[in-house]
Image (cartoon, rainbow, N blue to C red; front, side):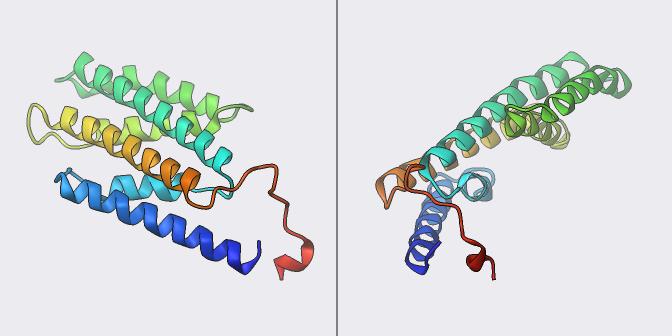
Length: 169
């Protein structure tokens, strides 16, 4: 990747992260860092790769939202039954992570579900609020990156060439 392309990519990522932080802080969301983290994780060299990874992240987060709240609602008072019910879910998503397709989807589905169930028992609605904000913030971060990546110096997979060995030095 030449210096001009590196500079453009840095501007795109910086702009998307700034917009993500601004939106989250403007609307007083629970954790303004999550949209920016979503931008950082889905920013890849080409627009197509970024959109695909963003969709996998959104899908995994939505599955984790449902699964985390389902298991929390299933056994709200008994932690051992909860862990006995949640363990097969984690085993399943871990198994799916070792497959050939959608590893990032399954990673997000397991990791975010663990974040939701361990958010902390501060009150009755805290787990739901955390899950809802976490899901919304991820979706908004991916959408912001997609808009910036598509409309500001988009790069196609057709134009992308792998680095030559002299670029490794």
